[in-house]
Image (cartoon, rainbow, N blue to C red; front, side, top):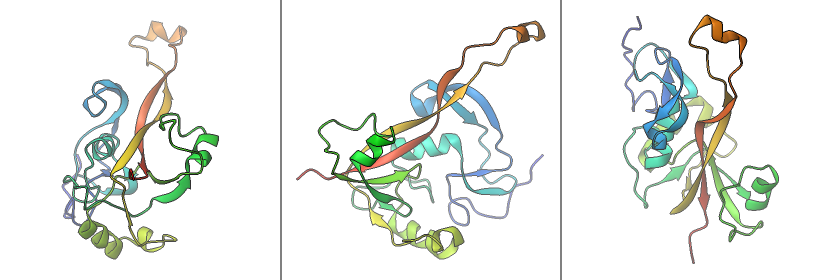
Length: 193
């Protein structure tokens, strides 16, 4: 049994952070993907110890889908979205790596995009608080938050999963591997002119 931490979720520890009491439960249909198959995790934020730099699988997907601040967990608005770890990258570079399959074909290879990775944009006040408290962010090459664009696309990051046999006799046959979503990657698109 994990004890409740004295650290406050959303203040001392980012809302999106995974905690030691939140075990991975396996692959299931997940509401964060409208019932699509995904790796899911128990929900017990604030129990045990925080696993800094490890996002909670389900909260991460909700943060990207709903544009929730990864620090406080509340919705961000168009005029208050900031990326702390995002980097500018060309659409062509992403396409060469096979990471831009869902990019609109109208985005030219030379277009600069904001690759936020698996981290949704934060409120500016939350970004400033996180920078003040987080050694990882302080050590980042460019710790100054970048304004997140008003247009974006989401790319599912997939992992291979195999069904577990329900009975010992089924162990002789192998289930087919399926690709399931782990996290969602967020790409900021250039604002329309």
